[in-house]
Length: 235
Image (cartoon, rainbow, N blue to C red; front, side, top):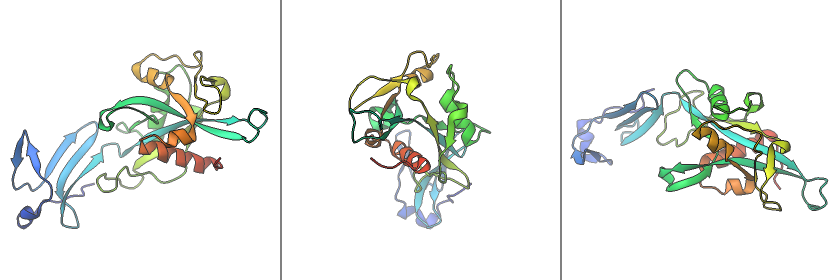
């Protein structure tokens, strides 16, 4: 889907963006494309409204976000008389240079060529793990999301979709007992055999309120989609 057009000669003086190539400013730019066969195309040109801007179109048409979770039922625990069911979200720590270093966020990835959103979710959730997750994936309610509608191109059925992945109490262990519980996978549950697998194995499950406070917007969006789909009541 081509969104931008060439910048007309009469509009060159009005351009708001400056193009610098190898340290040198390029004058009188009519259009620009930066392409990667794996990820997509970055374009610069004229918008339908007549000003210059840029946009990015992913080759696969978007990506998939996995929302690992489990629901802790404290209804019959006398130590928590005011608590019932609590929602915990699984986050992985990744080094995001665009965010200044290591951050906690939901696992996710781009769609590979000829792959749909569900297939991408399957791959991201269970890649190289000795643990079957496929049957647990739940497509969360809502239309695909655009990461930033000012600059990202999404057509019909394109964008980012969210999938829930439910874990159970017997697959996790509380490593910080009390009201601020933090859960991790039990050692015998997963057998990581790659760097990606080690990231997932090292994920932490925290109360959804703490997960919502992280700096990653996809994490907040994924938790919202999950709670809407589960009809989970805020506590």
